Image (cartoon, rainbow, N blue to C red):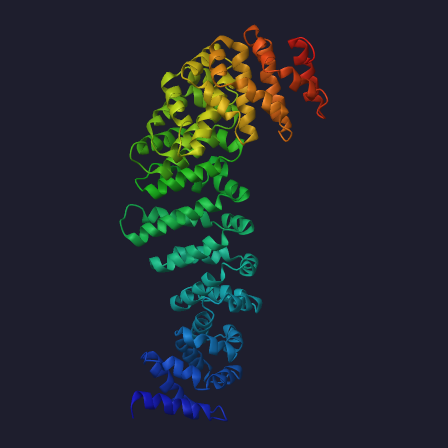
Amino acid sequence: MTDTDSLSEALKAISVTTELLEEELKPHLDAVLAALLDKKKDAAVEVARSGILPTLAQALRGKSSLSCQVALVVAELARDAAAREPCIEAGLVKVLVPHLNSGDQEMLLNTGRAIGRICFDNSYQQDQLVQSGVIPRLVSIIRDHPENDPLINVCLLALCNLADLDSARGALAKQGVADVLTFQLKRAPDAERRHVILEILGSLGESDALKLQFAESGVPEALSKMIWGLQGGSDPHDLCSIKIASNLIVSLLLGDESMQQCFGEGSGVVYRDVLSWLQSSNAQLQLSGALAIANFARNDSNCVKMLDLGVVPHILALLEQHVDEGDVSVQHAGLSALRNLAIPETNKVRMLEDGVTERIKGLLRSDMPPVQFKLLGTLRMMVDGQERAALVLGRDAVLLARIMEWCEAKDHAGVRGEASRLLAALIRHSRSPEVVGAVAKAAGVQHLISMATSEHVIMQNEALVALAIATAIDIESMKDPLREAELLPMLKKMLEDPVGAVEVKFSALGLICSLANSSVMKDELTSVNIKESLSKLREHSSSKISSQASSILAILGGDAS
């Protein structure tokens, strides 16, 4: 008899069986199992179509002595995707689930494999599994049999497949799964096991509640320790584990409470390890280190503490290492970290005194738009409220020349916008005739006027305020660029715009007021009939605008005729 004949005979015998007698069924199940294990062509499809699946379900439902062998047959059958739907239709998943409570480890192994394969890539069935309570059982099995590697693999793969479901995350949060996963991560015998655990942690770590649970259960420390043990090698699997684990730590730091737990007032193990990543030769760890520092720097107290602990020189050294032909992502992340650290006022002063702005200026030669964008934003944060910093940078001809180049970046609107905003910030925060003169000499006034017509209200306001300050303190440097750019007709149009933002109109009035107080521009304001526009604004619903319009009319010499 051929193998095919043997399988057909066994299927026929099982399909006509009326009583589930072990001595009658076992040899036929052995034949079916042998065909499946030998991966005979179309064997799984033949079994699925034979009509024996209800008999297998009945055997599992009755919890007979054949249950373990039947579960193994189903597990092997479900390797073939074509057999999975027939298994579901025969009710095999429902009768298998109770066997997850078995005390027999082989039964648990076969049952777990069977359920996992049948429900693979089937979100409806996976959700039904969660509803039926498999999550607590899977976690309990891992806890009860922590050294049974084949069984642990099956349970971890099952959790990995379920972890993307919101219902599963909720169930896992109640189970305190973090300690189980941490223990298994520490004893993971190979990269494959590590990656499954890391994938589960990554899926679950998207939940804020689980972020905190993970932090309190030592998950970040375990990940950091794993990274420490894998550093220095070149094995691609180990490098992949480092990448996944370091990204996961960065993700866990997005939760405020979990971040503070890891920071530990600057003495936390994770924070100290992150600092060492900045000095690593591994670009992935450098990137994750910079991103982690940026995440730690989300409140003022942490920023001040990190400055005390000397984090800034490490970030600057990293940025300088990558400026010419280095990793753009690392530079972007490093500048994000510096920008966040510069937010507290006290830090701005200290960073300026420590020469940070001078070293940041050394990065100006970068030709990568994402880096240029972040660099400009970092410099703008450094001068925010800092007169001395704005004065130093605003008089720097090399810096101003580079800013002018970036103000004309045709292919990158973000860089263009940030360059203009830095230009405005230098004037607004320095309020210095020297800076105004330097900006005008560098042909920066035209860029500020263009910025004043931006679609973004905040940028319009910044530009208009900077122009108002500049004209008030150095009209001689400003008058020619203002005329060339036809500023006055533009301001008149702003005042008359029926849908213009109130704050933009108010800032425009501030600039007009500055010009009206100048003998140089007063007549030109009259020549564009600005009085007419101002007269209409006296009836504006905003008392601030109507009052400002009236004041300017008085300066210009009365109502419009």
